Image 1 (tube, rainbow, N blue to C red):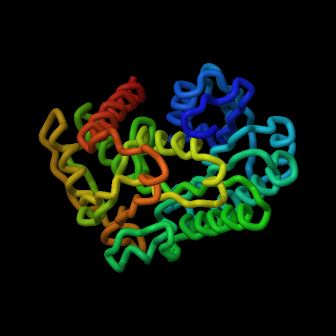
Image 2 (image 1 turned 90 degrees about the vertical axis):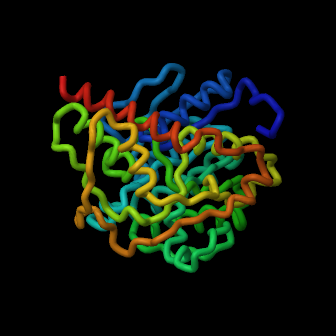
Length: 331
């Protein structure tokens, strides 16, 4: 799938962990971009999400035999590996689970590709959290910045990212390492910061809680993208030529960090009633970092990708979705 070429009619794409927040946006974008491909998706949930034109497979990424069997069956042209335990507080409560899913699950996938489908391109999705303590120097992280993870989620994703790079270098697999920074949008769980704020605003508007939003550290600066921009970056990576599928890593971010308090104020300004806020110590994250900044030179030079959705539009989309979900839950 080189840039400027149509995807061959026989091509197939697989998205692991597609039942999650990003997955549903990615599946829709893939279907729009390449309507002719055969689109497969995996989920570990009890109920398979239903999207038109997608074949679903129930898969526990921790079970190597099942992963091998799926790779042998599908022989996908490309795989976008989203399957992960991505919630930082959960990673502290259950680090063993987090490591089994994030590292062992990725190793299972890479081994299955190596033995059953070596022609497949793998886009391994990491996280800006992998850089961790490196952000303390105040400089934007580049893809060469050494990982300094500060929580089990970040450490397990860093190990998986390094494993993907090693499989590209020593096994010759076609691999691209995506490193998205913070993103939000419709469908995100309310245990992530902006979705938590927006859900509280929606509940207050509906009269379901007092007019007070509880927050963590509002001074922290983060680089946020709308999920649709992150998904567009994944599609751009899928179009890179084969010479750029040798383990290269790409930060996915706007390149502009803003205080979380500024984004909260944007949500409060959109509220349909007056709302105040207060600090909740329980929402403070251990080993927090003041500012997270990204160098996005590599992605911008390799692709035509640029963020298309402003922070204002991002907040509008998130809040409107939270209002719909709160209204549906209250019926």
